[in-house]
Length: 287
Image (cartoon, rainbow, N blue to C red):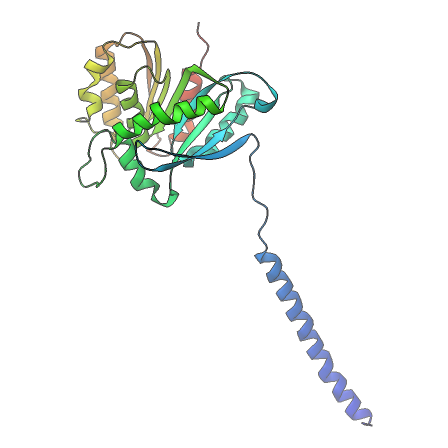
């Protein structure tokens, strides 16, 4: 048997080893906990669907925000179509805030996202452009995308949800804003409320050249909220202001519109102000 000195030496070796083993265990346990994914955040009254379009040959992700108590009521609701899926969290937040602010009626919000999302910038340039854009391969798909909205998406939503087919809205920003104006001119009976924010259109855009013909005879009353930030770094404050002046000259019968230049806002920051303000205006009660 080892003597007292040997026993003490063995114990002195065991203690550091035990401490190292315990420390290693705690580190591994912490690492294991860190690698365990937390549950995802789920927004109430929301759904996700996918639709395949024969008009464009592509699929689209639909991020849907429903009015509170949709599934426990029998009410039918207006539908607001929002271009670009990445606007979904903002739109869902506006929907929830509206429960308390009551600035607009509850609506079914359909956010349309290009799929796959990693290619969204390329795909939206194709879908939202009315005509081909220089140095942008595949652009000019606006007519096909508009056909998709009219003949595939809107009928699908009307069939799936309790909707009010006579009350549809469309909201778009940047290229989506240009497309919203394109839809106004080419399918004036499809949407009754339109919010176009920072439309990415040059002054030689078909939106300008078609305005007189397209807006001279609207089939029904339409509300349009047009806006842009004064500090739009892409230069669209000038073209959007020019289009507002054109509307002032044309004075289209049946078009109830307003133009807002938001001071100090740039191309993207303006969304946080213009989206809710524009929606409150186009959905304001009829006097």
